[in-house]
Image 1 (cartoon, rainbow, N blue to C red):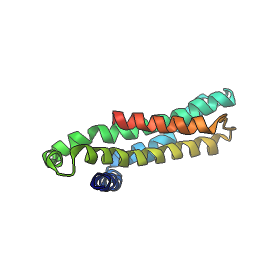
Image 2 (cartoon, rainbow, N blue to C red):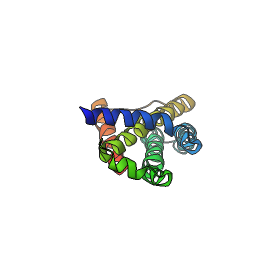
Image 3 (cartoon, rainbow, N blue to C red):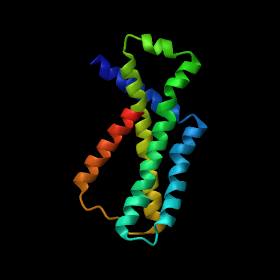
Length: 152
């Protein structure tokens, strides 16, 4: 139970503090719009299936990847720079739970960037979004999230 509390507290702290960095705000809020517009224009003349796959999901995945890699991959370096890495490592709560909570906090922002990208592409280009199987889409999103958490 203590590990779950540490995980939740770390995720909430990371969720609140990471948006304070201007570059992270750009990656989460502006970059999905830019990627969505660029990929939407590139695949506008393609079939609805290709448009959905590359413009909608491609822009969402690339922005999710950017938000996870930009923040999660540099969290350890940032903690080292601030001089708090040793304290986190030696904390009785457990280093792995604190770091996993940080990655989960960044993943929540990554989902927001996917939603922004999806919304921009569907609203601006007004093309039909083709999803043949919602179950496989959900499974794919869960597996994508888990793999990006592992990389982060």
